[in-house]
Length: 215
Image (cartoon, rainbow, N blue to C red; front, top):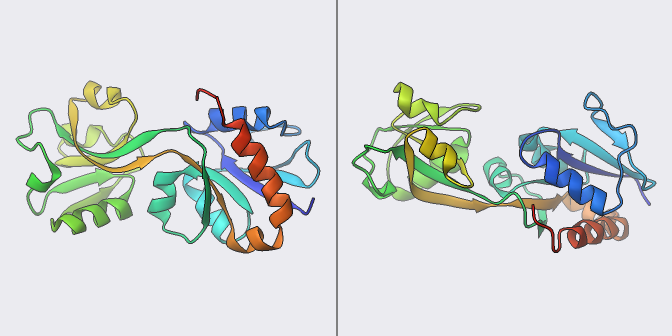
């Protein structure tokens, strides 16, 4: 096998299911250590690159990694030109617009011009509201977005939600869905052509391992 690097999340909600998929694929990381970013595997020629979920499309786009597993939301937010090979069928969630429970607004179209929106997804948020013709002020946060309306930092949020439990606990409710997301297998366009046979073997292993699994 030609040298292939697969980028996976180093932490976060996708890390555990990705590790389970690798295990089911008989891809075992040698000397797994959270302090080591690039590690060998039991498949000769295949290395695992553990990096932040948000950075995986960047590593794949620039060819540092040949392939990667990350969320559809991250792929769309980055907007980089990579091949989206397969829906891995886990990590399902929605990117939603949410307001406080006592808000008078029940649809994103009702939101007024000039509102402040807190989010980790400024590009997707801007695109969504531009399509609605609503001018908003975007406040970019890196975590704990749900607290922003409670503290008066923003009027609403755009954030990921799977069960809606975190929204309810923070006195918020969803009024629109921007994107339905799940984990996706992506590939560098050049690598897909130049290393096709070897990459196809890895694709087949990973996709097959996602079948009949509850993640």
